[in-house]
Length: 101
Image 1 (spheres, helix red, strand yellow):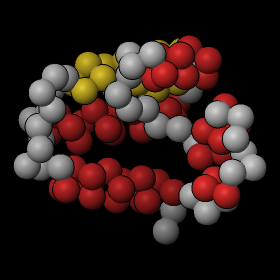
Image 2 (spheres, helix red, strand yellow; image 1 turned 60 degrees about the vertical axis):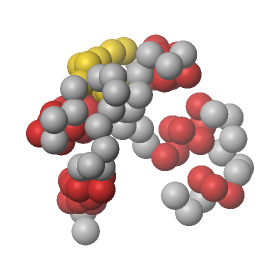
Image 3 (cartoon, one colour; image 1 turned 180 degrees about the vertical axis):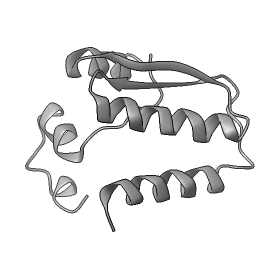
Image 4 (tube, helix red, strand yellow; image 1 turned 120 degrees about the vertical axis):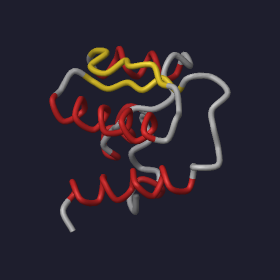
């Protein structure tokens, strides 16, 4: 299965499982300024909005440090990220949790 199909399947599963749940406040979706991040961020927005979840669009918010600062400050609820980048920026790449993600 290609990574694209895996992402779409994952998003569809997330949307299906969360159908009965609605956020009390809008879900803020962000991404980095790269094309792939913007595409995946927009897919997340569309899935949430198609299920009646209110969203705030922060797609292509900025570089990794900008987006990381926003997520850790609680300014973003979700954004697409590569597992390897997450391990690197959390400075915990030797943690076994990242090896089988």
